[in-house]
Length: 100
Image (cartoon, rainbow, N blue to C red; front, side, top):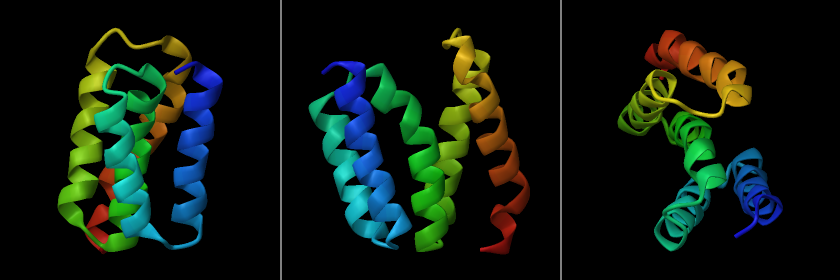
């Protein structure tokens, strides 16, 4: 899948998240991950999706899954243009997930 199509799929998931359809968003994310396991756009965005869906579902394990994946990406050689977003999401989620 090309990057534009990948982003369109991720945006569909965020529309579900913004509509508080967290379980549906999680199902769609898992479907995408299974169907496109090597798509870097989907792989990168799963961090934010897991954290946001986990927050909506009040599922601390899902939030931690997103944080752990994000931390591993921060330690790897990812595309540097994604670093600010990744640092923000991992850091803010690490600090506030205790409120769930």
